[in-house]
Length: 149
Image (cartoon, rainbow, N blue to C red; front, side, top):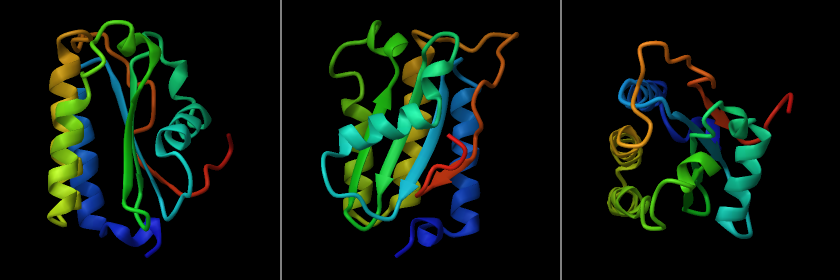
């Protein structure tokens, strides 16, 4: 199963709608990256992808990456330094558990969508959406190889 075909176009649209909904609650920036496969530590890989996507370049350092390696059934949620400086070490636990439960039941679109929306609601406390908020990162889903970075 290739990353780019893991979700249908309709499912991808649902995930992107969740990103937009979440970003309407917070100034945080949320991205999704899906890879077919990766062997190794999923958090290390997600951190590498985070940097390659330029997610550390937001003004408030409040980017969030949802990373999935579909063939290996691994995922990670990575928040930037601005988030980590304000939240507890268990901040992402509820979102991770929500994804894990849904993924275990084969509900990948629902799990990812619900997790993204929950992340936006949680980030709202620390990084509320402002009237002058600028969308600093693309809202698209990136797949496998990261181009141009």
